[in-house]
Image (cartoon, rainbow, N blue to C red; front, side, top):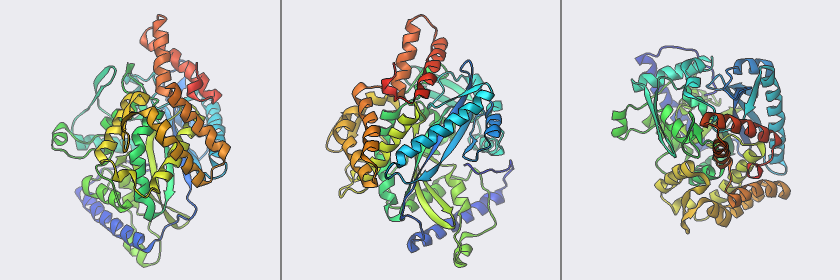
Length: 489
């Protein structure tokens, strides 16, 4: 969805042509998978981090266009809200000191971006949801200027035919309506990319699905929305609701949502792309000139534009990615589970845990997904989002177990084993996984710190919104120290 598109009106013919082209893309992908035309000898990893911009009072600052113009850096790009930007970190191998180099690169880039934001009287905040965000900040005029966001908004609401209800039961209860998808801009995340071979894609995607709930429990950092305390990772239910193209009647019929955990373990990346084509009508039926099968017949590598564009409008939490770089195609698992922040080192600890653990799980002789139902993985996902480190999660051989105990007893050694398999230097491995260990021991992640700090300010006599603003000021100060959140006062 980073692709630029013009605002347009689609016809019935556009939709028919797009459906035909999707079939051609799937045929081409089938042939390429059969002939092993993919790059996977030196798998690379990548990061995307979404950020908020706030003004001096902690309110969202709609200045992303000015900040991006000032940066003039292609690694930074617009995001949905005018108070969001995104950084795409150049891919690299994580062996050796790769993860430490990622950390240095991200800190350098974010410091440069923060400097430019301050020129616009703003500050960057790396968090899953901005705690000071209120409904007035996410009206349609806060949508970024790129035509693709307006087009996506039009298509989602055309499919629904009515305003969206946001209904989140958490510690408190949020119930409201929105007439645009702009509340999606409240959700800022870290996306982890991992290049894999076609033969191993199913194992890695299944592994990522199996641990998604654990990732959320460990990394939750989004407890407040519109002044209310909801889930520990409120990003999850908000995102599921605000991009839902189904009116209530289709929900009752069991039609699948576009923000989707999935419904089964897979054997091939083809399973996911084929499900996307079979279950979800096109939101953006834009057809390019080149037919992928004709390109293959000429010995060229197709970009599968229609398949890739459609894939960008089906919001799986672990998404398959097909891309062509320097004329060679590759496949990636894009892990979209985690919120941004609280610090760069916290984000890198989350990444290290993920990259290490999925490698170990993917290589097991008796894989974890053969020992647990897919529905158990989905229940873990929502439990981790709702309760964070207080969640109880299911794991084969252990049954229901507290999230922190599961990580300490079973998963942390497996993550260390996987990082060793990637060739990560021991001191880098121990530093980053040590942060995960201490989070479990202290019970403090970003969400827990935000809630405790806001409650302390409320107990001192401040009202809720004043407490959230004071908490955010303290959060930004701590964020710049790059000390992990479990050490924050």
